[in-house]
Image (cartoon, rainbow, N blue to C red; front, top):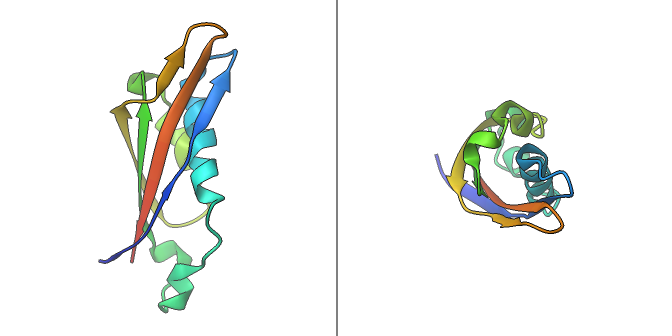
Length: 104
């Protein structure tokens, strides 16, 4: 397997302080930075992609990983949660710092 792509994003949940929502928004932000169909360029199916998602968040235990995985329409994604991100007390806000990598 060879790493082909790395993307970074940022997601927030203002007012609600929802860590899952912030993680999903951050992953979408990272995904939307890229419109390259790399799998097909190398003769693979999109379902063959191996995707590792790292999300930095203040309360990793508060993130619903299943919701984050729903962002990926194809490929084999794995979500890894790490301490990171940012909490802002007023207004109640949380920010995540996701990145994802793709291998074929």
